[in-house]
Length: 110
Length: 117
Image 1 (spheres, one colour):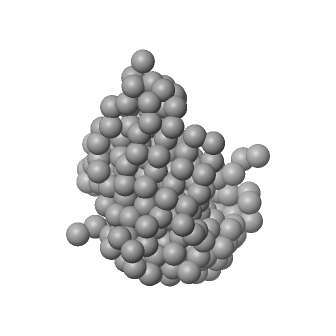
Image 2 (image 1 turned 90 degrees about the vertical axis):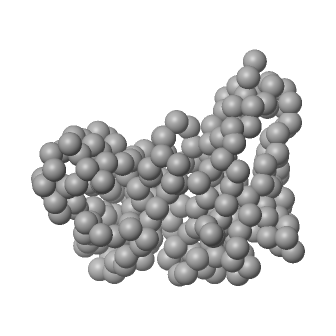
C-alpha cells in the first residue's frame, strides 16, 4: 500500500462549480502536508501548505483530518485554468524524504 | 529570479551511453533532490542531498550517481543508459532538511525529458 494515496480521477467539473477530492495517508507521524498542481508533465508547483487543521487561499481550501488520516482539497468557482493534476505530499517519511501521491486529475469544462 | 534550473530540457540517448543532467539553484537551499516521473506512477525519489558533500539514496537509485560539491549544484549522472530510464526527471530544493519533522516544501525545476533508444 502506498503511503499517500489519491483517487486518480479524472474529476470532470463544469466551469463555476465546486470540486473536492481527498488524499489519504498511512503514516500517522505525518505533520505537514502540501498540495502541488502539475500541468501536463510540467514541473509541480506549490499550491498550498497545510500545517494544522487546514488552510485557505482564495478559491482553494485544504482541510486536514488527523483522526481519519486524510487531507482534502476543495476548489470553488472552478476556472478552466484549474484543469491540472493535483499532487498530495506528506512529510511522514524518513528524514530527508517527502511522500508523494500519484495525483488527482481535474478537468474543468466550459 | 531563476530558482531551480535544469539542463538540458530534452535529451535523446542510445542504450549504453552516459550523460549528466545538471541542476542548479540560486536560493542557497541546503536540501536538493532528484525525482523521476513515469506515467501513472507519480514522483519517485532517486537521490537526495542535505548539504554539500552529503548525499543519500532514495527509492530508485540504481543506475544513477550524484555528487554535491557545492551548495548550488547537484548533478545526476546516468552511468550506462537503459530504455527503462526513459522518463521525466525533476530536480527540487528546499531551504532546510525536508521530510520528517520538517515543514518545508520543495521547489522544482522545469524538468529534463529523457528518451533512451
